[in-house]
Every structure is written in structure tokens, then in C-alpha cells.
Length: 406
Image (tube, rainbow, N blue to C red; front, side, top):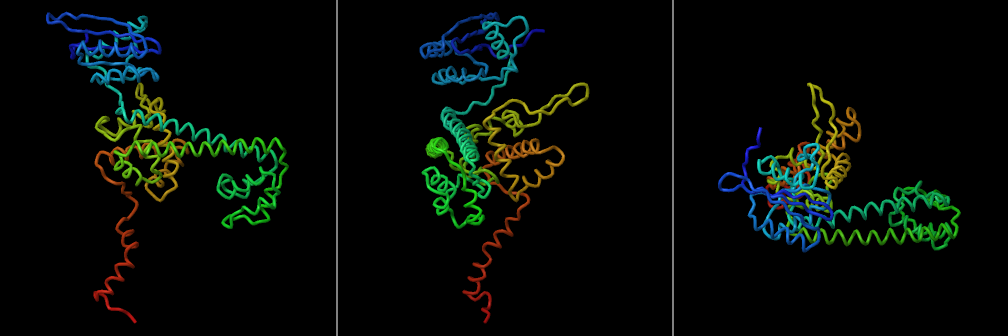
């Protein structure tokens, strides 16, 4: 059986770190197919030559595999000449066994594209792709900050200081002031003077927790860790400012997503740079969930369901959705009741993934309809009455609609 041609002029690109192999299938007026193969390097001048060569061919379709991060610079080079290439999932275009070469990959991509068998993956606009660099580096800084905080906790425990027993967060303002006092060589009594009156533990308990055997090595390591923690926090604040500044045009979308339980403004911004704001690119909510990789897997054979494991997708978006799910499961919303129903039957991790899936579908419909979040378990009219009734009654009495009582 021969594949039926839908497109007359297609180009397939097999992209690697140092080489790009291109294959063009051009249908001639007499019905024959001309095959043209070229190889390009990976430097800027080579990418420019590739873009010019592809542009001269005037193709109907240009396809490439999403091979790591190598596809991004050729994609941008093609974009500068007005060509929006299709970036396709590598598992959809596996080469026929026994014919695995770079030229064969490029030709196979072109053949599948010519038959219209490839569906492009979502690639956000250039401005969002650049903001992804900021969002993902911010996530790396958050990871480093968590590691440093855990390390500081470990050093304190090693020295005998048990501040974490009486304080819920040893990186809060009061606890950090006490730790800095100990690092400076002050006594436990002097460090106790920095304790806030809002701490639930008694002064005696805090004093006993501050007792330890801090050596010079302990103080040196703690001081360096504290400096690194503060520098990381300052860097994260700069990244937050730059990210929100870059999303000024998407402010309305940020306002929408911020109304979802468990989603703050920075979380909304990081999700937008991953999935964009134009949901027409996905078409349906289930396609968006499949692209992110947070929906149940579909593996059935002989009438038996083999596995429901989630597939690989956008790991950054999936991590954000799981963070939202953790927060939303602790709020008075429909997500909390759904989580409590699932965690008993499916376990904690599966329940979190399911809530993340539900949040993503909610995000899809909110961005599509441009509507704020409204929870099905909350009576918004009753909340409005409760908040405004005293003011309404006062005004009604003031203007004589309700008689004033003695």
C-alpha cells in the first residue's frame, strides 16, 4: 500500500547537536517526485543557510523531531524567514527497523508529512519561549534554595541546636535572627532576645532549644550557608520581577488564573509561559492534558487495561500543577472534596495527579471563555450578603427605609 500524497512540497529535518540533515520531496508537474538531500552544520551561518534553502523551496510543510533542545535554534532560524515548522513527537515518527540513518530519518519525516500523517506539537510564541528560560531557571534556584535550607537544618542538628522542635519554620524572620545571633558567637540568652512574642513555644522551651555546642567549623559553614540562602532569595526576587514584567500583556490571564484555589500570581505566570494563553492551539482540554502528560495513560490489549501510568510530557508544567494540587487540596473548594474522595481509594500521589489534571482542565476552560473561577461548592451570593449586609442595613436605616431602633 502506497501513502497518498496530500502535500506537494515538504521538507523533513533530522536535527542533531552538530549536524542537520534535510530531505525535500518536491512533486513535479508530470507527477514524479524529486528528492533533494542536503546537510548543514549547527552554527549560526549554517542555520541561516538552512533557512534560505528551505525558503527558496517554498514548501507546504516543514517538519522536525523534538530532539532535546537542539530543535530550538533551527526552529527560530526558520521562523525569521516566515516559516512555522512542525515540531513532532519522536515516538510518532520512529524509523522503519533496519534503515536507521540520518538521511533515512529526514526522508521518513518528509514522507509522513507529505501524507499528512503528522500532527505538530505545541510551540509557544517567541516571547513566551524566552520567558521560559527565566521561569525554568527560577525553578532551579528554588531547588537550590531548598537544598541549602535543608543543609542548614542538618548543621544545626549536628551541633545540638534543636530550634526546629519549637519553631515551625527555622527560616522565618524571628528564627533566622536567633540563628544569626548564634553564628555571631552570642550566647543562647542573647539569641533568645530576638524571639518574637508571636511564637507559641514558651521562652524556657526556646532557650533550651538554643542550647548547643557550636564549634568554629559549625559557625563558618552556617555563615556561608546563610549568605548563600539570602543571595538565592534575592536572585529569586529578581527573577520574579523580570517574569511578571515580561507578562504585562497577559495581565488579564494572570488575574483569571489567580482566582483558582492554590494558584498564586507567580505560579500562574510560570504556567502561562509553559502552555500559553491561546487554547485554540490544543483544541480540547484532554489534548492539553495529554501534551502536559498529566492525564491517565491508555494502554489496552485483548480487552484488558494494562497500565494507566501517565506519559512523558511537559515536566515543568506537570510539576507546577502538582504544586497547585497540594495547595488546593487544603482549601475549602471542590478540589479538596475531590482529593479526599480519591486519596482513600487511589493513594496520595495518584490523588494529587488527578487534582492537577482537574486544575489544568479548569485552566483550559477559563482561558477559553475568559471567565473567572467559580467554585461549585461555594455560595457566592451568600458570601456577598454576609460581607455587605451590615453596610446595607446601615444605609437603609440612614435613608428611612428601615425604622431606627432605640
